[in-house]
Image (cartoon, rainbow over all chains, first blue to last red; front, side, top):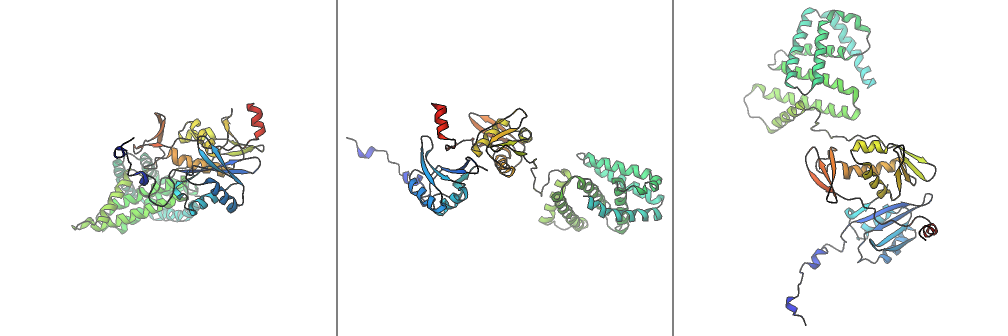
Length: 110
Length: 314
């Protein structure tokens, strides 16, 4: 039994998410790692958990013609992992799909 | 630079010859007086000892006037140049006698010239361009000063602005009011060791140039490149993986932008302090203080052989 009127209600709950489209908040880190030989791995960390990462990775795989997975990390949440140097590709794709703004993307590595 | 000198030389020689044939003691005296005026001017600016030296040189030259004929075969020297400049100035003086403050102006000119000659030898092309611009500016300014010098009219905003800039440049020639300050650095020496490792040979030297702890730069490099590495006995950095100099340069540039140059005034004269677990960048030039991002390794994918990892942990 609780009194409905005394419930705390945050009128700005929606606003904090950002009114302008559904662009996520926080930085997206795009990193590159070297593997054996001239092979590389691209990781995308920081995509909002509201997105369905599995769908994103499926689209990316098709678009960039590479393999990739979603990795569950205890600290960083779900991380996208793509084969090869897809830093340029993923930056363009994320902005084109409207998932992140260009200034939210932080590209690391050489 | 060599070309420049070559270009200057023939005209110089000509001037020289003219001087020898036409000029006499009177001219020499005139020169002496001019250089004296120059000295008087220079005393106002105590912050430029180089100029003073040059003036001193000129005076010596005037005293040694008779000996000069023997020096004729000397290829190129600043003394000759200064002498030639004096020549030009005296000629100018003859032409511009009717101007009231002509004297002051061409003294300025002379100082400028001697300054430029000195600098041109050291600096690269860009700087020369910049200085050329400056010189042009100055000439413009001088024209402006001439415009209002005699009259009693109101000064326009542009004139006053130019004048302020001129004074600023005169007082501290190093400051470079108009031109961009360049942050010149030695390139990193990156050499591959075998097939899997890369050596960053002048790592500690670059740290010293940036006034940063080697550990901090090491952390940043390794986090950015997503590899492991260490500093070896010869103070070079060994990084795992293949990297080219270009790539390391990119990362270094990012480091400098974030952790070395001041975010407000872009001066590289900064100190990195650690304060309650956060790094702060304190600028020595403008005094601003701002926090900088901490170095985070972020997510690291497994790149080593899983079997090997399992063998290690188990």
